[in-house]
Length: 383
Image 1: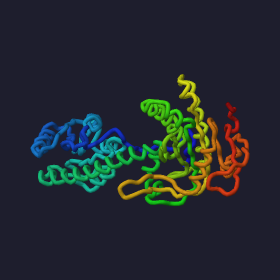
Image 2: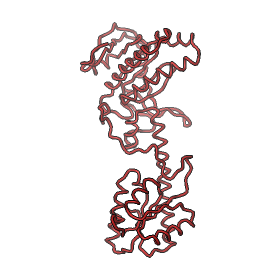
Image 3: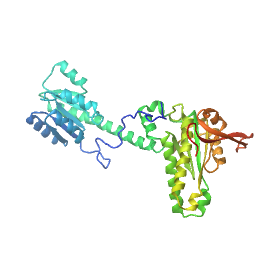
């Protein structure tokens, strides 16, 4: 799956604004049934029968009006006559089942046609049930209740899907969330698993000193400005946001979804963070704010990734020595620098401009390690 291009992920149809079957307060509304028939007495008969059962009834008198009201009235069920002039019930049914907003609405075809081929044609058009006129009132109401019950189950599933979408969208870009929901079994596994990921740590240089001399309100204001820019850089490059730790941000690339360009996306994020932070510095006039900077470390390697924590509270996060290495690299990065490991450099040297730094000792490592300062992507001017 390609996450790095302009057309990175083909969006699945995920509705986050429409809540069929529910009112604006989140509570289930009175079930609404759309009755469609070109014969007025038939519509009036069904309206009277359904209204006395407590249903909210909407009415349409031809196929075109039915298509319009299916969108505007948001019905939970449609009772649709087949034999209508202009556009028959089969054609209406086919169009409704092709539209994202109306595909899930149950449709019962009502018709005087009783041949098997007529029923097969209706089911092929997408109808959920079929009743022959003259219909039995008890049977009709029973089927209405059954299909509305199925509709309520669908609404509950959609509500849970929207909730999951909002929760995942706190940690991942919209494109990744959409891909996960389109294929959850293969995209997101509960528990932990070992995966190779690119790890990015970014820390605000000089922030501790700044916070000691500044009001709490300004500290929070500056943090929010910085985190807004750095987090957007993560999402713009299809990364997974892990957490904020004080004035530090942790993100990773390659889980839950990898496109094989995880390190490249991490490095693009790092340089984009520095670009965004430079714009913040230009905008700020306070010398104390302008003394701040961003130090970033990037490493790639195998980690344990998954939902880690207690039964009551879990985080989708990464742990392992390679996470620690990325953090150590960030700790040696000076203001405005992106420091990467030798492992990351060997993977990325074909597309980045970077220069070796003097060997340094990283905390937890017995031997000095070679690091590299990333300046730009090849073909992109430095500065």
